[in-house]
Length: 108
Image (tube, rainbow, N blue to C red; front, side):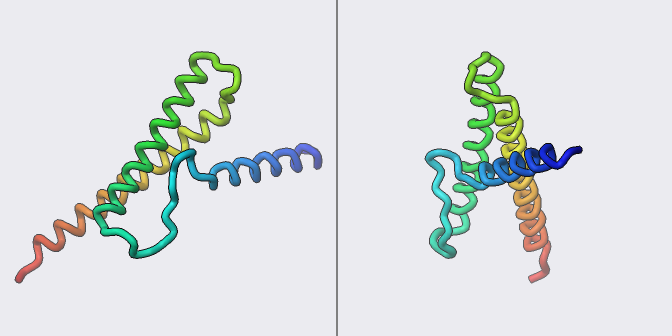
């Protein structure tokens, strides 16, 4: 790979990383700790995962419909974000279930 090609690929990767760090339109990221209960935080996380999946599906449908302003790489990035978020949510759920079972099996 030539030096200009490497620089171009590096710039694309940096652009994608900044785009991935930006919140979805209408999404509020809470930075304060201890503001809500565990249940409300869990519900907010599930809603964020749901919004990511809906946004990815909407963009995929728009790409399939042939809309000119929807790029394939944007669709793939959004689908990957939704997939990673879902896998994270699944792992959290599995850990919660395991912790619940451990507590329920404790001798009192």
